[in-house]
Length: 478
Ligand code: NAD
Image (cartoon, rainbow, N blue to C red):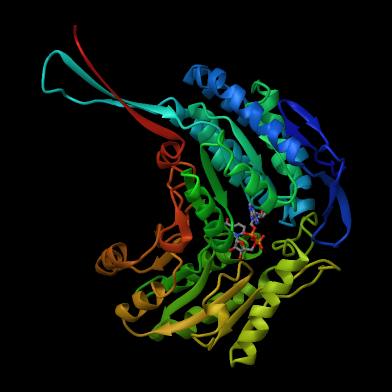
């Protein structure tokens, strides 16, 4: 039942020019389940040519019509959710319930961006003379190159396609080769909803080669990437060389600050749920748990109880709460970070069971204490089901540790003190801060980082701005 994935170029689903294909593997078994086509240079050229040719016609479609189309695609995703969720689970590994949640949230994102596209206002600036009009127009930037990752293969693509299509941009997207079918299903829903041929093109292949072709291409006017800081910096540098606008949604090493006046049980429950969602492979997953010393053991104990109840297994098993990691490479990376930390003196104080987990790339959820501050684990994003506990005494100490790294994506805090909340709002170097709950990532909220965690925002009204350019028109009456 798992479909092979082809390229979508100028409205046709087809293989690349040489017929090359890559294998798609099931993370819960390590076995091949399908293939994805590889785009060659001529395929990429054809995709860009289609996006360039269709930019004028798509821009000139009315905002209401574009919005109606996105809403129809959202409806199709909801109708197809039960059929698509096993496909997303098979290629990515997340439990079925999370796959369903991702597809439904993709539909919600499409609805949100449809509405925002109808509200992409310019403005009128009062003139110095009654005979002059001064109008600030917001126009679509042009054909977009979008690079998206495997952890949310559908919804992270929607965060780029939604605003781009809503305001009249055309797109050449390179979704992940690891989990290609869910993004293709999204493209199919958009095509079935009436998206004209050539407005959206999907290419897969060798990521670096595709980026090196698309980013400098004179027809591409905007580059949007979600992935690691390291790759993001390379792509941003290339885009800078060619004066292309960018959105970079990169990694985090997100702190969660728990103060002694918080509801400790509730903080542990909510933070554990947030930590182990998608096996910790979430850019906004909390990783550094900074807990005030007086409540440290209570919090650690409550958190440990949650960790030990998590059922790890294959995503298609309805009992599973946490699936495998996405690839052998990620399993190796996460395992190395943990074994380095333990060889430097860190202790594993809690570990989830792996009942029902088979052959694949499974890694049990774990909690570590006494991790050396210089350890790679405390400095590089682990992107896995790892929680690191550290006690602190004063708010100043907690803020210093939270801000210590070059990342600045998400932060969490639990406290009942308004004073502490206000200090954190002012002092934490982060793109998003959730206090006393963990609900970030809703369509209507801006999502993006500061410092090395990126440039720009992929939610809320801010997401639309990223696909618009400003044009001033000033006119005198004659
Ligand atoms: P990665 O940056 O190598 O890959 C992430 C995505 O970017 C993949 O889909 C990949 O196909 C694509 N990619 C890689 N190199 C590229 C290039 N030169 N040009 C264009 N696209 C390219 O990361 P990874 O090894 O797959 O995952 C590990 C790290 O990635 C994690 O530790 C995490 O920091 C980061 N990551 C972040 C997010 C996020 O949501 N911000 C998502 C996935 C991965």
